[in-house]
Image (cartoon, rainbow, N blue to C red):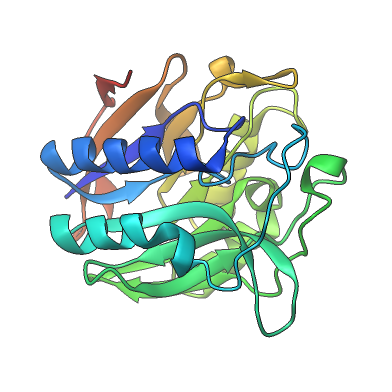
Length: 256
């Protein structure tokens, strides 16, 4: 199975532009054979969306915003792991989430970031309450958002929950809380050696230099291959039966 990582410049937004970029890149990934498509953390609004002087109006239903992505998932028969901020209309709180969108264009599950970074950039969000592990297309998938992967106990618990693959969406360059590669390797190791795939992002907004941020593939506690640099769609192969990578490097598709 081909998995695509959308290693894109999205942190500055605005949402309307990001949505266009996401739809274009999802189409490109699907046309290249991807079945699962990962976006970075906060790919919809942009990681710094509250810090750039633009008013943001929250929708009670996230589907009102992301309908184009839902439609594409159904049309192209792909699964999308979408990073976005969402308002929970039941508790009135806002969350930094990864939505899992299936090939019917439906949100089948979500992971809400557990470890909120103590800065104004994430001050709008509330910490999630649970780890997410779901059985999907023959694979038990654990999902984490960025700093969640720093805490080895999250990897360990996902392993105990039966996760066979851990997906991490991120906005995490070096220097933000320490070397992220070490955290990802620790996450894999403490999960029992499970494969970990990290979709990071590029660009430089408010001094956060993601041109040096890596998207990566890790297994058995060891980083196997990675990418950093300009915006690109990163293609890789994963054997769903054996639960291992069959790629030794990313196939890089330039995105402009």
